[in-house]
Length: 483
Ligand code: PRP
Image (cartoon, rainbow, N blue to C red; front, side):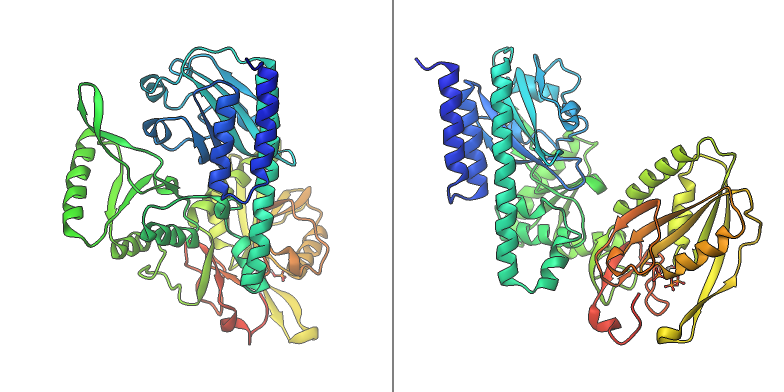
């Protein structure tokens, strides 16, 4: 009989071999999960990657677990064994009784008793997790933990390799510029998701969601609909879950019998799970849904000429709340803070930011203009702030810092008035085009060298009212001055 040392040694050897094979990523991760399960004499294993917001765990490989357990619902990494996100290896003695488990009832029903979870790290940053499950109570040993950590390291190398391959493949297929665009705003793990779609329309739908930067999870939950003798005999698994909208989506085909069956299942689902928000969608319905949020071909806002959504309204709001938390913390001991916005692009950002600041604030605005052209262009203040900032803590608010020339001018103008402190907060930082060497204290997003519009930013006065930030088609502005 093999000792645990033999089993772990053989599994590591086997996993390194699989990692070097030409199998698809999905198959490699499934195979790793199988090897872990067997070596640890456990009952199942899952390999997860974190989505780009580091919120949800996406299954990339699995072995030995029931479909009901795998599709028990979206797995939020902050609610389910959150210590793993802090880089710790976690053991769970009894999953159905442990508060750190997000779906304890399903664990009990599906006979998942003990769990061992470990982070997958890349350069000190958590990018995924491995979890091992047993049906019987189990005390995981130091050897178990060492083994799972070593396997996690192999996964890191695998993910790196896959990304490199995809990057190289892309270089050959598309132009450099398109490759940069495709990488920049997208989730770093989106292209790594080895999702196997059942239907081509689902893949198309996922691409559309990616285009609009709408986070999605594919079939994360199955809803039991009918039971016979305590056994589930009918289930319904919606195609997508959109966490940002807390919405399940089921796509429809044009075949009437299928629509009738789906409608029946949906009625049943709504009766049994009234708290669930679900929509049955045809393609046209999807466009209508996007329009409701201001996106897509039927959206009210003008998006003609916008190539791609760089940041959605939800992403912007989430980032603003974080910035506001940092600012409120840093100025907590100050009597008050003077926010100075540079018109007009800053309107949306400043309005949203100030509502989340938990300290006394006063606001002021200034306006500037550019005279002349080419090298002889000069900046001039056309509207100065209304009150004195001498002795005050001042935070300059900008929508975008591009060359930095505007801010450089404004900062020297304000420094001369001896404020108690003078700092800068910008929503967007286009570092690639920086000329003036200025330091930015709070930055929302660092963006690629693209012409961006929306959420206050304009092109020839238009697009400011878009609720998101989009990239303008280069053909539109090539004649005019850079942003
Ligand atoms: C934008 C932005 C900044 C400036 C940054 O203003 O609001 O003030 O450009 O560019 P820089 O770093 O290259 O100096 P814009 O001139 O577009 O006016 P607006 O705010 O009225 O749209």
